[in-house]
Image (tube, rainbow, N blue to C red; front, side, top):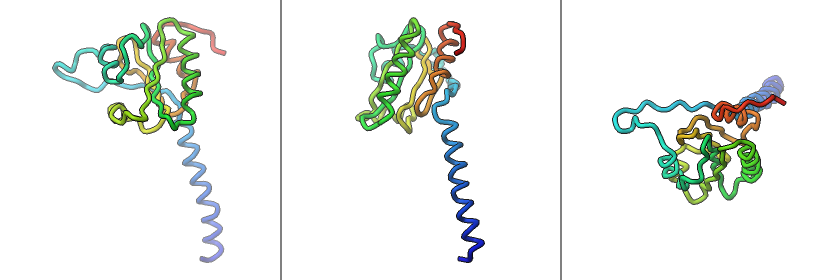
Length: 159
């Protein structure tokens, strides 16, 4: 390999890797709105917390009256314990909001059903148990609070 080609490769490869890393980092932790899939017939009925509880393997009593933060974790996830503490703290600040943690370590069926490709992954469910938002990676607290403000009708002064 001649030196101009080597120089180009030495500059281009790290630049491409940095661009890909920055693009990935900008998407991680963001709240993404989930649109309900078009359903017909008997499936057109609105979801309920009983349906969500059955799908997640969680008791219906674990869901909040206004919203629920569902965190998917695994035993080997290093960021999951801190995420669980943060989401529990956020849920504690809102009346009618609860945090539920679902361990996927031995439940690949749930991971497949909800298309969880990384942990932590968080779903924000409304009062009916319908998924309104999805967060892949460690959630950004201010975005979670903004979404909960919308769901609960709460207003707060931005910090």
